[in-house]
Length: 261
Image (cartoon, rainbow, N blue to C red; front, side, top):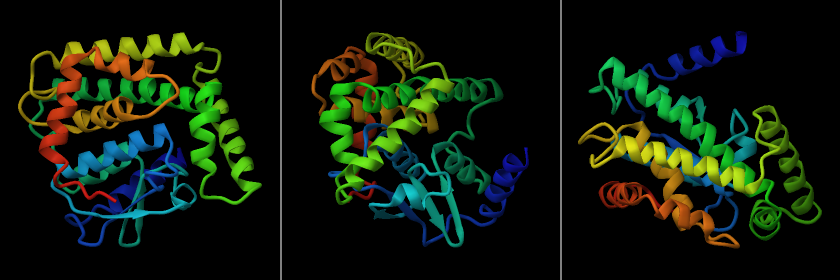
């Protein structure tokens, strides 16, 4: 409880002014280093900030994960304050009176929160499983990327250490005993629910984007464009035409303003 209260107080103290002019956005190197789940999170936050019209200076660091207050990326440095991960960053922006979902009513806001929780629970855990548990993807993609910026033997030790951490997390949430087909089925069910909610709308809640749109874009755009040993995952996402169109729409409308490395 003390930790939770501390986190809330930290968010409030760090959100006493409008958006600072010296915000730095930290993530691992995109081309050589970042893993599938981490890049989804980075894309989601960058897209959210772009939708919010908030500027930042992109900082690529080999040790971004170690620098983060939560041990996860991305994180923002705003003066003396550090805020990491999607939900706390969104909360910090909202506390500044800069919410992009302020137009939603209470029922819509509750629904949005439920879908955000589903995406975190299903898509993020699925990406962790596929990246760190699936033997082919781990050997061909995750381990080389995660260890690429470190000399031997750290290039082998650190991926192994991170894999153990991921296994512990997935075990705690009941995912470690799933098969790859189970995980793909979870992804399909999640995408179907998102597709049904989006329907023919421009965004999930009408004509204006919310943090849900940013989060979904971060995961799906990454899953569509990622290079893996087989294309099954990309093929699954591409079957949901309205979700693919959403990604295309967001890329066209907001990526002109996102700072690329």
